[in-house]
Image (cartoon, rainbow, N blue to C red):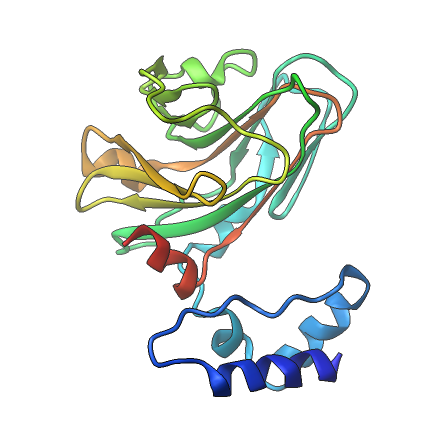
Length: 227
């Protein structure tokens, strides 16, 4: 694993001024060992940038009435049910006093014909079957959603397996932003006020067997994609 780190440090050394570099690519079998080494050498912020999201907000829980989904810190995975499976964060995305929170979402598995919803919600106990219709729900499924109502899709066409996106909630500008890497485009949904942003939590819905969504705090390099 040290060779992976050494190789990345050479890339950093040879990078052009101002060039944004990707994090080192680590095979899954070595990730735990690599992470331990990075922490021991105190290189996490150097390699990945400073985390820009309340860490507690990445812990997930199934909405009451959701029976077939497993939740761990930063991951939601659907079982065999074809019903809507809803998940919310256990804490607000904005830490006390913060005006911005930025996080990354990865669609790790999604069957053809299945769909997911990714966004935010203020209600900590929405209706499990229709949480996307909640008046405090904002995000993206087949269409952008604002206050539980579908908006015109525009260039947005829905999620696919393998998608990565950087999300940012901005209490100052009262907006939810998303940079979608496959489409290379930034999408926005306006929020009614700063209070809505302050109360917002993660909100995920899956509607296909075996769907997996991973969430992690974004790093400085990720946040630059939204500039």
